[in-house]
Image (cartoon, rainbow, N blue to C red):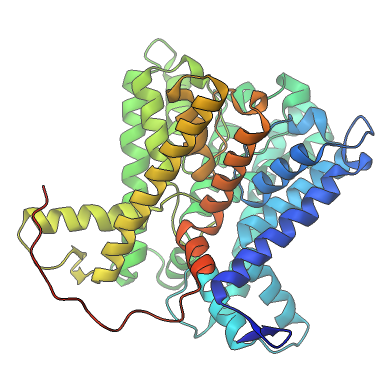
Length: 444
């Protein structure tokens, strides 16, 4: 194991945790500098810390509009943090070590395995290089697809905007530079009915959010879905359902008075962006209560493991539904695509559901009590934070220091992983080997 001095040993979970914390601090210091702000003045520690955490945790919640507050240097710092957060601190460090000829230790390999949710230690460096190639190829393709719309409307600066929004979309971050063009905190509402922007951003969000192992299966097996891993099949099926069903619900329930093209663009975008990109093309405060509740559910679910997205993950939902069907069918084990799911995965899925619900609800309750605000909009903000989404009903910029700290912690939990944080803090040397006597307990 890795040693600091002679006594301190870090677990792989602690390596991931310390890596994120270190980069958040460095990003905070960089964003505090006068050169990072348009005004040329020092930015407060609170604002810089919130922005650095949101960028590295690829969330998108902001207390200052990105385009109007931050200078070109500040925006570049934010973009670098987004890219590091999307790829993962440990992943980037492992690739740099590999390219420099340094040997990767077992601890680093284990941390890298946890970071990208790989199934085993074999071929991790090859997977990491593949991850980087796919990431930069997708971001380049996204930037090229966005350039005609952005350059046509904004001129040469549209090139930088296309690159920034492509990286932000692929990394599921949701940071935008539209504040000086269509008003602060306006996100992509200026392009709400323009397929040239809506569709590329949607594709980038989905591709970035399906996970690196799914990319590997797609590269190896192409359209032969039967050859994919069970996890990849579950991710693709769950993702498809979580796009199609909300799109239909929003199409018929929220935007019935608009033109067909506008209804489709708005419905599709609002179905995809809550998992977990944070861009927006509609006024969320004008949505019905049912519509906002649907958005909250999607934000908590998030993307897929080993991806740029946060949330509980699509596989968690797939495992929970599979276990429910097993209970209904009186089957001993949960199953997906003819494969048995291990009980440990079922326990982890149930634990994640309880953790995310508890953190989102308790955070919303505390913020509501501190700020004297209604519970529902507070829950929207906390679900957005822990799901690393970035959608907002406009509450975040006006909240106090204590509420901002709560959102910072939720963003950190959501990106690093709630279980990773707890494992790092507990640092248990191993699983308990003894078993207590069994006794029946009735549930339900």
